[in-house]
Amino acid sequence: VGPEKAAAAAATKQEVSMFYDLLAGGIAGSVSVLVGHPFDTVKVRLQVSKSSSLAEATSAFGGFTSLFRGLAAPLSTAAIVNAT
Image (cartoon, rainbow, N blue to C red; front, side):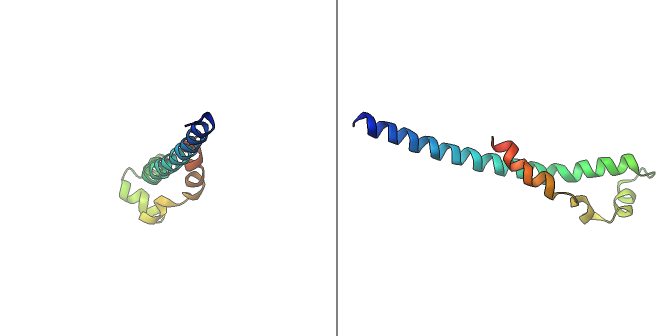
């Protein structure tokens, strides 16, 4: 095996490794936002609302599905931030 073939094999391995790093970071970042965003939303709503009950605060802002409002922006950047 000549030096050219060894260099080509190393470059191919590096490219695959970078792809897998990007993929793994993207998945990890996305899952992190999907799990953490509703908790952060609940925290902020409890701080803002006058009620001390989680159910009252959630229903006042639109119910369970409202916990995922505003998810698009952090979700779109999480994959890029965690993949690097």
